[in-house]
Image: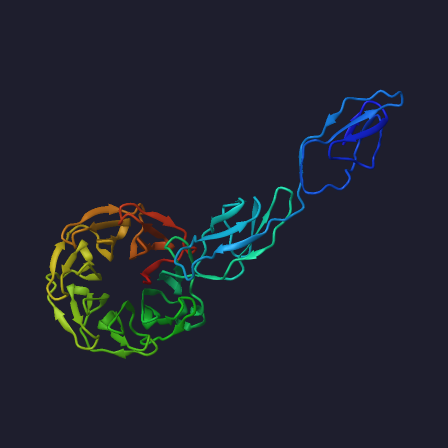
Length: 437
């Protein structure tokens, strides 16, 4: 645009010119004759009136002509499969500019530089990603080619189960998605699910009225109900065998990935939990019952030295730890000989126990926990910061994850010292959780 106090003839200088040569008293817009790409800092013009009086030369503000779009290319694809909900991706660009995202992926990084650019994707749920695309727009608004990221899989690491057939999955314990695909299509799909484990390439979930579901992916589930009269409260995998336990002494095994089950004669009473370690299944239950078996078939009752009901048991660092009512904790180096390391006549009971990073963490009602770093010999009290009852706990990827009332999920990356609440996407209570190695 050229503004002049008088009409006259426009004269151009430097690298610029125009077919517009007449100025008016006022403002006019001129179009410069086509310029090649480059930086222009020497373009000048002046106006000469009819009396031959010429204005001073005015220097145009420097500008750049850019009609070439950036060219981008994938340099480092997302590792696949990956158990990280915020993976990194690297691409190169021939120009700086603004990054745009399309498809299922995005990032808080929106500026690209010339050369390689590493971006961290915004948290993704577990699953397969095939439609993630990026483009770069330079300062001249030239849009690059579109690059589709090489497809990748965010693999689930954690799976939680609970009320009314709820199944949630996560790659890192932080971001959670619905994993109950196919469960609701079964009559037992609305029953509560109490425990879950993984082994031999299969997920197995157990719950109310003999509910059993199996899956190879943690997303699509198949009904394997065994006994509609007895709740199944715990499940473990070892020695190529799944072992599920429940009320009224119910004990069943499967050696074909949970497709079929066999009733095993064991011991009476309600069973709380079961684990596998040191080539041995250890099952705990009411009245301080502890029973062991190498294969789920031949059972031996053990002396637990407590009459308090035991709700859960875990194995870690060469030690079995079982927890139960009245804050009872018993430990064993081999599953055979047990020692009571903690009990109380006033405290509420422990509902679960997990092990990781040389630390045992037992959970209770009111959001309370206790921690041990010496194989269960001594315990230190702590809190998760919630007043809700805690029902299940596991450890994986450097993180303890506990689930509880109304869909609350808490994580701790400092061995249970501090806890962070995570969004689960459900208000249903969660009862069990496991980590997939």
